[in-house]
Length: 116
Image 1 (cartoon, rainbow, N blue to C red):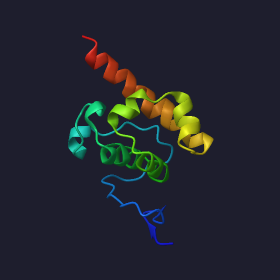
Image 2: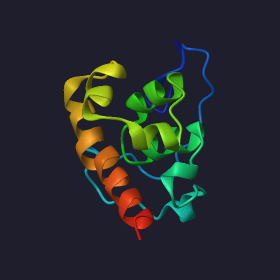
Image 3: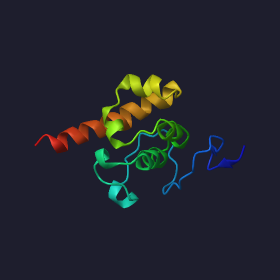
Image 4: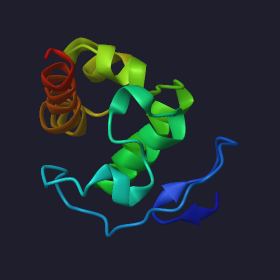
């Protein structure tokens, strides 16, 4: 197996560059999405935007699951806690952090921005 930035490249999936330093627990502020080349509203994100988002916030290994399941922005915004905890086959700790610190806040922000 070839290792690239701490990720196993054995699934035949393309690897995408990470544009910021890897964070430890994933509970950090996320840089402005426009600066990272992603549309500001997650509903407009392609699968690669979702993958790069999770790689950028410190979940490079778990980002592969989003790529394998072809989770785009619209799908991400529809995910429930149970989807993240069980549907992606992630370890419990990272899955909880991903949902609580990233998926849920993205959903809340999207709802706020589109409820006016």
